Amino acid sequence: AQSVTQLGSHVSVSEGALVLLRCNYSSSVPPYLFWYVQYPNQGLQLLLKYTSAATLVKGINGFEAEFKKSETSFHLTKPSAHMSDAAEYFCAVSQNQFYFGTGTSLTVIP
Amino acid sequence: NAGVTQTPKFQVLKTGQSMTLQCAQDMNHEYMSWYRQDPGMGLRLIHYSVGAGITDQGEVPNGYNVSRSTTEDFPLRLLSAAPSQTSVYFCASSGIIPGPSGIGELFFGEGSRLTVL
Image (cartoon, rainbow over all chains, first blue to last red; front, side):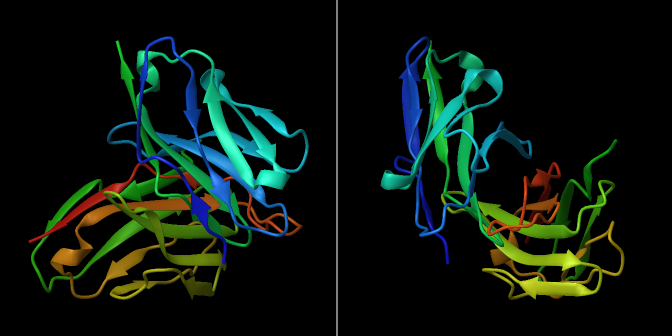
């Protein structure tokens, strides 16, 4: 079975600083990879997805992620954090089932 | 286009009561699933279905039943509620795609918050 590891259950950044949320997966076959965002008391919505096309994927709200097969990683970045980015972020892998990481809570400090 | 609709949004039960969480999608998705979300544990798969008449267990199926009589609906039944089932429940659906991944993007409902006293 797949496993998805998100390093850091809580990340704090200052407004305007770089956001980096880490995700590693375990698979010998490149899966489909996703980042979802969850705002308080809401469901999950898709930020971006990798489906074996370009390795650098751009998503909504200025986020992007790079698929690195050699490192089995799919880290999420945003050059400049905004207060509205405060949320829970989930990395996920699709390989016959969806496998989610345990999530990273992002706090943005004004 | 409603997407994935879950009802109820909130529910309080007493231990031993039974109830059904409803989930409906209008995207003609073959794949439907139920997750529970608990603090620090991410989302855990309860049951899933790849089409009408086909269901299977996920990671934490005990205490829950599902059925899939139509493509659109995938209800989750709690047979005898326990405090350990206090959680937020999410229904999600996706199209099934060819290739090793099998499942495309998951579309989520807004969640059902269940408290068992």
